[in-house]
Amino acid sequence: MTISNVKVSKNLEQNIKWLKEKLGVGKSFDVVCREITFAGKNGALFFVDGFAKDEIMLYIMQRLTSINKDDLIINPLPKLVKQYVNYIEVTTSDDLNDVVDKILSGPVALIVENVSEAIIIDAREYPVRSPQEPDLERVVRGSRDGFVETIVFNTSLIRRRIRDPKLRTVLVQAGQRSKTDICIVYIEDIANPELVNQVKSSIENIKVDGLPMAEKSVEEFISPNSIWNPYPTVRYTERADVAAVHLLEGHVLVIVDTSPSVMILPATFFHHLQHAEEFRQSPPIGFFQRWVRYLGIVLALLGIPLYLLFTIEPQLLPKSLSFLGPTKVGRIPLMWQFLIGEFGINLMRMAAIHTPSSLATALGLIAAVLIGQVAIDIGLFAPETVLYFSVAAVGTFATPSFELGMANTLTRIILILTTGIFGLTGFIVSTLIVIIFLAKTKSFGIPYLWPFLPFNLSAIKSILLRPPVPIQNTRPSFLKPIDRSRQPTPALKRLNKKTNK
Figure: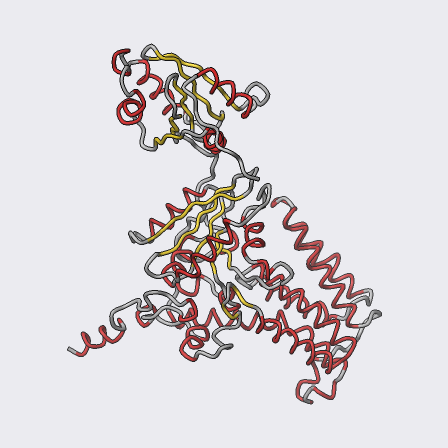
């Protein structure tokens, strides 16, 4: 829907009437029109109550009332903007539709008689919480500030960490009714221009009435191939340090107003396995933490299907490991025990989200005692069943990316079904299908399983190990950055040379 321009008239009453009708002044209690007189001229202030800073507007109105009549006889607009409206962010607009958009975004509009442009005073203040450490990405050591729901606060957290004049924060709007602010962040002389242009074009082509679900709605528009793909093709973070690290590698960030989750583009499968804690500890400890997490994710994905397979076909299990099989199967077939367990754990997870913190302990007791233990005592579940889907649940919760954890849960259910019905053949075929599916998946043109497919040995080392920062002298090649070098020479070599001297 294209909205034609409506020019600001020199007739004040005409402008006021049009704006009042368009904004619903008198129908909506929070949209205010304050008519004023200063320097012998009539004017009107339009703003949304709750967005305008009272102290700033009081100061501006006091300043306006102190203007002499003779001061605004000739060229009143430039004098008002440059001399009398003493505020940092002041612009003008000659389009009333644009003025409406600005008012609803928070700034104050000043309309003056015999002036054919409106003065936009960006003295807005959004309701905002203080930056706090995100619940999903906690670290033992490190910064405790995280992104919030206000886009300006989020960009400032990034600029605090990257003081590069080449850092670009491009603001666009999407949603014909919501007019949602979306910020594209990248470093100009690092990020691949084709990737930046692709992201910009995708966002500008969003044609929908509103984006109330913020970042997730935007993701489905700019990455349409991922709509029916359970595996995430963008990475979300609420940590400013994580976002800054990816910017320096050549990624592009997408920040959507009203959401504390920032999108990192593109993202491979292995980006969702990383956690900030690994780089807040020494390389050996980071390596240990990384592999514990990897093992937990593998157990979460394959532990239950493999246990089910060895139970169905015990000849596949070595005699030394024969004790892994269940001593008592229970009254329900094992496959259905695991499926019921999956349903129960996910039900408990959803219940925990909606349970007040004061009742969380009671919910845990209900899950552990009244459900798990009683189910074993009455013979509904085998004890090993509870053990294995508990291990799977812990591995899922240990996955840094919530989206990847849920995708692995769905894949695990599919593997349980195919293994329980078709045995070894079902397990092998379904596992191959999942691998092929991931191999064909792409994130903004980047292979999802890079650096394994296509193979890149040096990049694989950085995934399997936790590389020390001094030897990270190049940026990931799959991003095709303009500047591939992060250091003139490997810092570790420089340190060794100084030590030898």
